[in-house]
Image 1 (cartoon, rainbow, N blue to C red):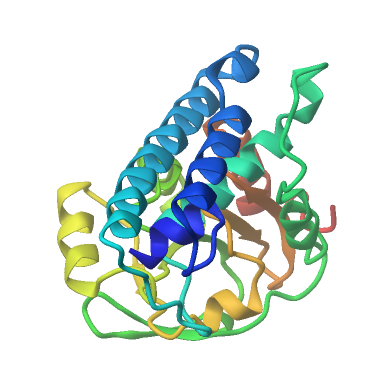
Image 2: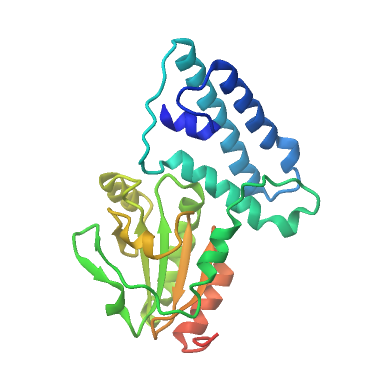
Length: 264
């Protein structure tokens, strides 16, 4: 229930009037008519947010009427609804050049993309994580190969949509030196669910479990999906916050496995 409070942006001791006002603000912020010029995938995400706000409102309305109050935890992991909310704001922010007059909420996460891009041309921070089979993978041990790191979660719709693209890219270039590592934010997910999910979706590349969030702390990957492309020398050369474009990614990988574009 605390997630519902956070979604609507009200405190744990909110009154019914507070909840009503917060829900009205969210409905206005995500009104369908404000997003008519957005791409279809962003419209879908905005619709998902409207549904999430409506569900949160129903929960809080019942809780306040009881009256019950949720215990707010001062230190608490961001749950999947919160991350999805930020994902939507990021995607809206990244679409600013396309909007031309369409209002975008002020609380966007455009800084996330800038933070990720700031790592470009730097040696990729090292980490060691376990695969679904319990094997340890250390990033620095893959030096000499082209490495794609994809931070994702099972509950993130854009992450799920781009999985087939990543599978096709790795199948095309794996024999030319490409390694794809799917870093699952397991501290926000469930390991058993991730294992079943990987089987169901035919993920052909290693899935690493970031159970403590240690890898996510070294990379700006609070918003998902976030992808880093690393050249054979271990340097980050491309970053992408949001869904990858398969044609663009394939071209970038093709250049890198052929030892071109390493110093871009």
